[in-house]
Image (cartoon, rainbow, N blue to C red; front, side, top):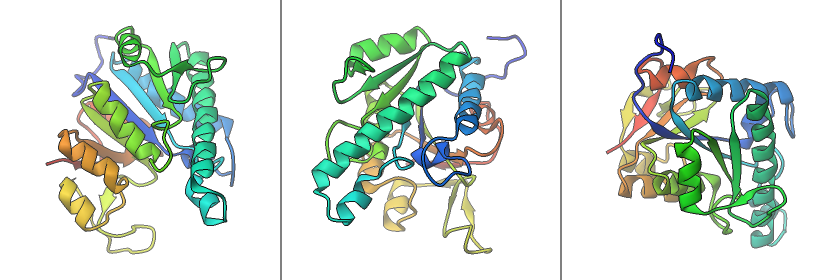
Length: 242
């Protein structure tokens, strides 16, 4: 770690971002400059010596719930959504490795030609060697979101927090894009998130984090240096805990 680097709060974290975060200004798919920008955010934290896990959604390519709503069988639609997360993971892996960061894509669905299968001890070893681990294909099961997958993997990897990168700088009592009087929480409890339906993550992910006392830090992925800054105790965010 460089001598002028800030003291970091966490040693191992999970970064959860949506597939839509990779679209940039596009309406669909991947925007390479945006993928590269996010990769540089990850690099800035990796340079501090923090061990990083990632889960990326697939909504920029295919969303299982939308597919099932249009008449597709839900299980099939969810598996298609899982495959979309693998595509996003490979794109992020490419961007990170172009920056010189060793990265592993670890898939819950076996596809040996493009990704490693999920083996917990092997994944932990990758993190110990300072490789970024991108967990793809959700939990490998339909009816579970990538939010739940991120919380599950964060617990299995003994992460100290989940960082949820969004388009806003925290959790609000109502949609700040629609209501000027929306108020941001500095901290909020798991139970309040569930009872008030604040939309941080889906209910099963919040419940899993609560049961294992795993804090969730919600911040803006669009804020340059935000990820690194929060790890150093700076910046604007909401902490979900207790």
